[in-house]
Length: 336
Ligand code: UDP
Image (cartoon, rainbow, N blue to C red):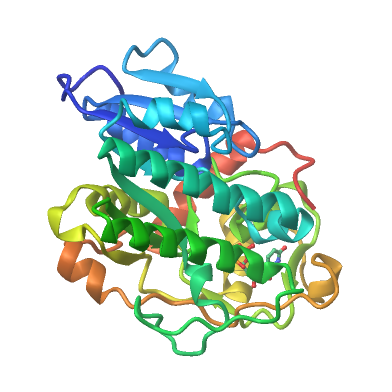
């Protein structure tokens, strides 16, 4: 895949580049001839996600933490374009490790933005549709209000930390930083983490492959807008590079809403699994007092108008490609 396009002369830093979305961004950048540096601590990211680039001179991987301001500063100052994806992600991960998650998500971004501001680098900040919390103003528009539960419900700390990141980005923008923000809506595709970080699709696929019950939380009528990773990546790169995108925030997601119950059926059928689909209480997976987002659907108008972006991969096709990958890569004792 790599080594085909002529060198573009662009030097790009991807924090979190060994993660699920980050590694797909790296693929695209290397393929088009960029010189790419990945900064990753390999906590939820993995070397396997980048193994297709083994021996590739255009890719350099640095094992390090975005909390290490010195490394961040050194790398950012030598890369005019920075994709900042390093973060503690996934609701389950956040509720299990609230302190580390908040600190990584706030301080890490603070480091990246401060360095980029000093160095004059352009930054793409990866944010999340979790920003909207449990707002009922569906579809979510970028300028819509955020509706969050109380501060002791850890889930909302992710939304809050990412919102602080966005506030920091816009505050630095006022001082001249060229930054754009993307809010991801349930991205899925090859390399989704078998441990289920941030992805119900990974979890259901693991259960279906292991032949254990597929656990649908609540009544299964909560919805999400699942977005295939090639769309996620295209929207991200457009937001990172379009002049019109500077200072802007964009929903990057599919306009199709799917219930979790329907998703479970599709995954079971797609994998020809005999797993039963069970409705289970949220408390069987999350700590007591967990609060879910009932519907999550992006308003896609701004991304279309400013970035010329629209998610195009239908759920059927995206799932087929993702499940084929899961079948090949997940162990039979996958996540329960
Ligand atoms: N979910 C589920 N069963 C599982 C894991 C998740 O029904 O085993 C539900 C979860 O409660 C939520 C939706 O799937 O309503 C999406 O969860 P995910 O963790 O993918 O991310 P979220 O969209 O909540 O950030």
